[in-house]
Image (cartoon, rainbow, N blue to C red):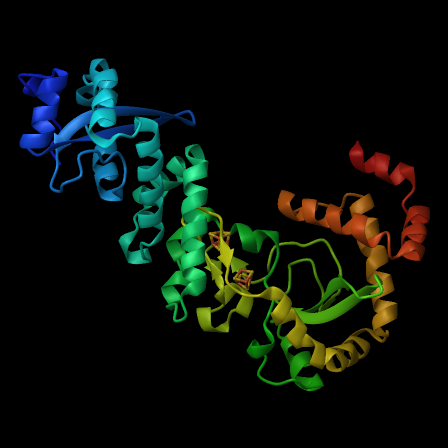
Length: 367
Ligand code: SF4
Ligand code: SF4
């Protein structure tokens, strides 16, 4: 794309610009400069190859080209901004702001549809910078894209497995905690087989808390990938980094990852999206509670109730003592929310913890 400075045009009056657009295949586009988390949009004229007179940022390809051009040429267009905005209104009957909003949304939708081999580091960084500033438009595009994806039946693996996006993100979700297995991931539901998964460090037993119809707390046992701080039985604890996470990402092959990971769609705009109905998936574990309870007994020598009571106490203790070393801010936030929720139901454990964790302990931690 050739960028022309204003002195290439003989007549840049309103009439002259209209003539260039209507009769000589010119269009109005924009250069979006981002500095210190602020954007500056500069309108300019460029040759167009279609019938769209005003196309501010709807193509990621054009945007990238523009982002790398000689800025001094762009800045020469500054005195013509009011005039170009006026012409946009005359030609489209819409304001510059409205068109920019629509074009930005189109840009994000087009960008989100790109596959891994069409992305480059430069493009992802640029899109993320734009998304931070134009958050409404990127969110709108995300909702649109997610809705479109949820309707798609045969998604190919590349939608779920986008190494470039996860590499740039640095594995935030896996740093927060590990992912859950789906019932369909488990080849065999027998006590020896589940114990072998635990022994190999492939799984640990986790509790999902929910309220039953009588408003009483209940726990559903499921399997997840182990966290670095959790043991084989991890009914409740502060979430920590997944034990399968390495510097190069997940050490498990895509096919061997827990179902939750295989259904997580890494978003180009870092708002990752899971296309599973987790309530439905969790309910499927109901048929295997006895097996998991037996495993807990064999591993710990305690019944589910005894083990749960013990772990709830440790969890309360950890939160009160702020044992947050190596824990991400997201997980700390989650632990504090869970703490407030559980202390309403596990009063005995809470009172016991308060006796152990004296204010002195808390003060020591704070100093
Ligand atoms: S799935 Fe999302 S949060 Fe997790 S590593 Fe990939 S981009 Fe980051
Ligand atoms: S199993 Fe892999 S994808 Fe899942 S949390 Fe661990 S490192 Fe991440």
